Amino acid sequence: MPATATTTREPMKAVVHHAYGSPDALDLREIDKPVPADDEVLIKVHAAGLNAADSFLLRGEPYAIRPMAGGLRRPRANHVLGRAVAGLVEAVGEKVTGVRAGDAVYAECPGALAAYVRAAERLVAPMPATLTFEQAAAIPVAATAALQGLRDRGQVRPGQRVLINGASSGVGTFAVQIAASLGAHVTAVCGGRNADLVGSIGADHVIDYTKEDFTRAGRRYDVIFDLIGNHPVSALRRTLSPTGTLVLSSGGGGRWLGPARRIAASLVISPFVRQRLRPFAAKEDRADLLALNDLVESGAVTPVIQHVYPFGEALEAMRQIDGGHTTGKIVVSLLPSP
Image 1 (tube, rainbow, N blue to C red):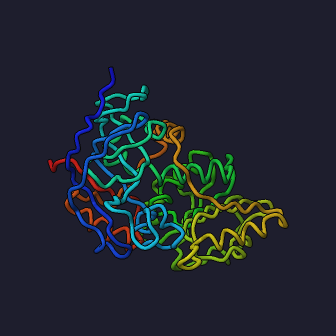
Image 2: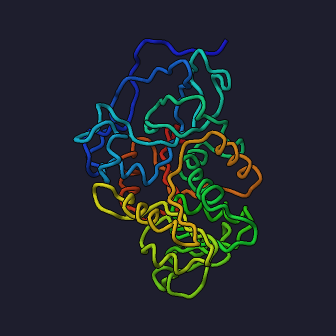
């Protein structure tokens, strides 16, 4: 019989989001431990990976993202940030058959910055046996975004010239490795201090954005994966081959809609040009976590982690993410210090 959770409420530690704004709007406090529904899994969190989306939710900008936190004026009560988690299954609902108590798993689910989190079974996957919990927590959200953006939206094929703008970011470091694993010739755009890093994980050519504007260099690419949004779509199109693909996953646009304005503009243009302009937003997908397991276990993909913070310093970890310009991933560990 599967282990099931008790209905008795128990306290647990969590990073609670009580207002939109800076990381000062977060508190480390006790809230009720979640109880999984019949089709859910309760995970004892060993590590949580932070992502740029956590900063957007923290600040509530663009405003269109606020319903994800439960309220337009303020987050819902005891809203917990974080969506990438790795840990051990604590208990399962009555209808769960694919995992059992004690399994090492990872998942993308809301509320990861807590001692326990519940997740739908369809979003939970066994974590790669070769990784630590901290490494595994870096994969959901960031690596799935890189995989879906390149494989599905970019449809990258062997021999193509692929440019990744924002190559040293959390998603970018996975994108460099995944593009290389797909057989592409990879050009990475990042700051000069990260040139050796992105070269070591698979980039064939590195452009230091502080010294060169790749949209004015005269080189053409079959696929551009834009993770920064710091160039107009017209400039990016100038850098594409005549039938190339532009995958857009970021960009400015104001407090209300954020990158949605830029995405809408590309959708208007797309039917009238030979180039493929493809806005992109990643989605949770257990099958993609399993695909990433294969890439990790083959050695094609390894998480790049800038810093692991203990749970007691989770607010400082959020300040790091909120400040931008991270190299690779920021992870919060709930494991005891060695």
